[in-house]
Image 1 (cartoon, rainbow, N blue to C red):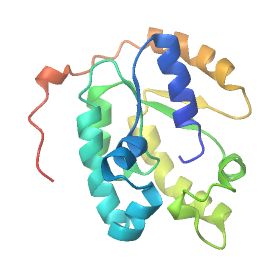
Image 2: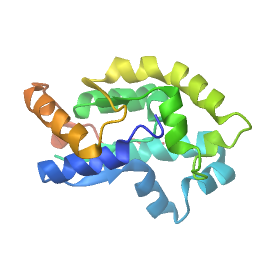
Image 3: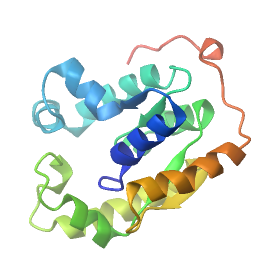
Length: 177
């Protein structure tokens, strides 16, 4: 979910594991030359989600990368399948109130530009949480712990996760969207 710490914790994990870190939203912004809210404004959520799926497909083919997705990436079944097959999926879980506190001043969240952002977060969480849980290999409560403590808590869990993921060479060719 937005505000759960995907980018911050992802960067910390990448550093600790000596791996490359990619944030799908930042990849999209770099490619499009505009921020996510502008993509939403110009193309709507549907256009953004189409771009997001394409970027996720490309980024998830990179071996050994730590990847942060947008909170809504799980809405598409194709994205859930890619994530589940291609990597170890962490669900960084937080309560709606915590997510609201972390995002309340952020104007780069198009889905929260509403008179009741907490209500919107609560509704999004209700919709998305079953999808996060469906694909998660590990569920981490982000709560109030510091980023270094969370990273140190996650590292041994990752090390003990014996999941077999598909090597990029085994993946089918990139489909046109």
